[in-house]
Image (cartoon, rainbow, N blue to C red):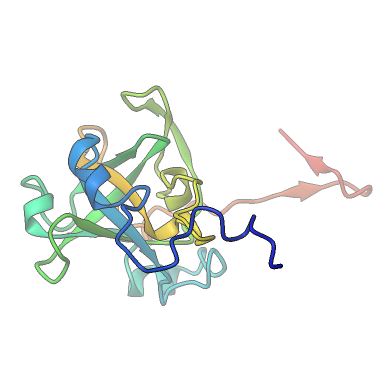
Length: 183
């Protein structure tokens, strides 16, 4: 007999089952936008993040439908909040994205600032999507990166410059025993 632990809770015939972080939850949770992540041409995961030419070629933004942009326009800075954290992103507004959906590229480097969000989380100005992604699996073993919800609102603090203009490279120093030197 085949073990039943793997099949437990899975229906033998297909039927709709609301996803964690899916459409239904977005309608009732206070986080009305579902976000999906994608691989960007400017980097391979987080590799090549410091290459300024690639940063200028493809800006690292959150892509929104005009209905979800809350009056913001392309180039404005948005605070993107979920129940697990907040990031800052410059936005791109386009009608080619479905209303209620946001697209965020993966691979940005985390760079926390002093400000905190309304939940008390420190805000990531680097825009690392993992900061706002829930780690709960979406069902049947899929990873959670494409089933998350967020709220996008105008940022009232200092706006972000285009990321190729304000990149601060990270420098790590090690001593002879390969121990990191901290200042």
